Image (cartoon, rainbow, N blue to C red; front, top):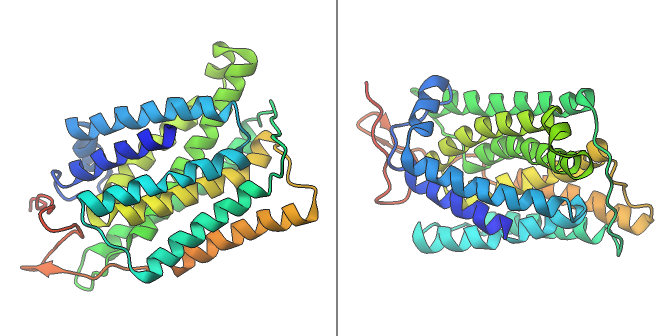
Length: 301
């Protein structure tokens, strides 16, 4: 339920992207102004936040290793809408990568065995910073690097896999922080949660990630961006969940192999995705890669 609502907000983001001027990561103030003052985009934010509230409740009821496959299964929703309403089509290679993503998350889910291990431990600020800082660096590199490659004489715009990965890293950190907020609130109440760094990390990194998501949705197919975003974010939950919340790794050898195999398949799927869209130019100005009839406004000189 949480992820279906979550992706409905993504569809609204995709539509609003076609009505905005060209967004650029190297112009952050302009990026924030174009997104956070757009009423349709803000409607999408409200929808996404509704899904986040339900997700936070789910994360107090399930361990991450079981919640992640459920979250990823809802990708069928966004792929269906991308095909029906935006006329997007995946290549055979992209379908194969998507299938590998699904298999990877299935392995991660099975690796939990028949146990639902819940913990009430939440890591301190130092461990949280060790997870957040590298993630922010990766996101900034994709955000700025995407503009360096997308514009210029020899422009070769990045494909949705790059924007999906960068955004997924940001939103994965935000979801980890939401898990922390939910756990602290469940154990010690609102005041303890408010005095922890988790809610502020969750909000701050989400603001950053959603702005980058909008650039990706304006330039690339939502089916690719959303798929890579989801798997990158959920893989991040599986990797860093044991560090931040002490959710145990499988002790059975077969289950451990399945868990590691899931991570390996997710990495293989990312590597297999095409790195670039086909460059298109009209009158020397870059065209963003949208479906027919969904061309965004030109950037003013």
